[in-house]
Length: 80
Image (tube, rainbow, N blue to C red; front, top):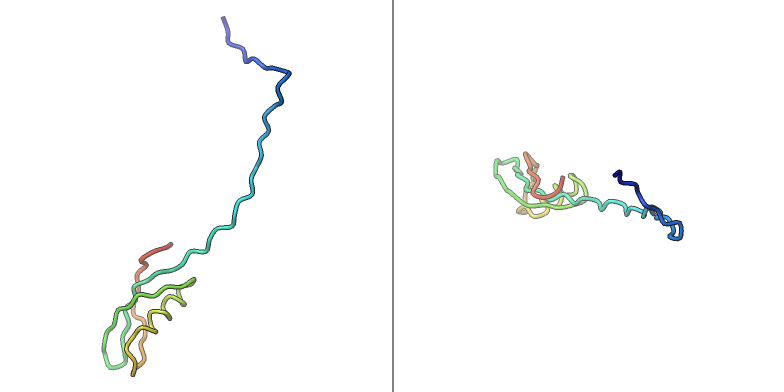
């Protein structure tokens, strides 16, 4: 006895419907940033933004005032 698929001509055939795909949400960058001042002080801050540069700028804004701070390293805390 062989198995044969049974079809019913009175039922409509199933149709595959492709749904639209929503665009991917842009990943936000969250970093811990190590910064140094010209006089050798060190500071660590957390920054976030849509890009690496924005996240570093955000972290730099939380540094103590009265000197300039340059990033010397960073590490992703969240995201790609």
